Image (cartoon, rainbow, N blue to C red; front, top):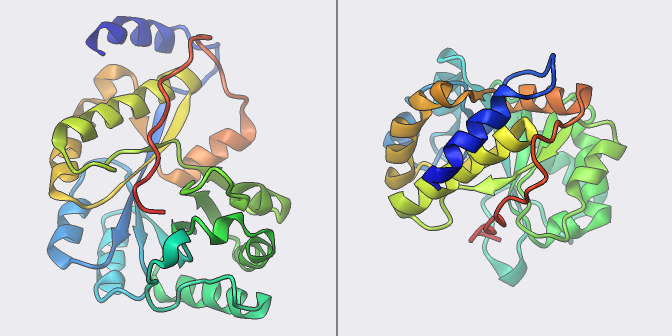
Length: 262
């Protein structure tokens, strides 16, 4: 992968005139369970975005701390997955009525201070249900809030449904830590950076695992030297809405590994 850096740097330097510098949006999911792990995650440098599960014991205190640190905050909405995996309190399921789904979304948003948007926690079953996504995006459109499709299934209709409701939306490009191993996380982080250099921006999702935080503490400070910034996810969405993606190369990037959490 080291052999790619000269080419990637050249691509970044020869972006179209007027293009903004490449940037990543980085979301740390599953915030709120563990206070110490959450505080370690909040210490990451740069404009990292944090996704809080509403029913967790430390969501409110950590979200307030994140806000005080100038970080962007979203709600990690628990959604029904394939295989019958149990959901946290307030989770969204296919057997809920549209009114119940809208109410659950509203309750989740209200439970996390300073939330700017939401993404799905699990959801491989619910995000491919068009009726359910209509209700979810109808609730988010009242904010206005933005939505990030975590893409726990290729069959998800969440992103296109959000756009149809006028909800600013994007999708996850790379999961960094399906495998909790520092070498794996580092390779996935490099993939995220390559995608940003290729396309102008990319969105990654990670978790407050010790291995992940160790890699990010080492790698985030060096991004500027590689010509890449870190932006809140809301800023990444703004870019996607106002400027066409620039393609510095026609070479395909490696396939992105799927998440281990459906």
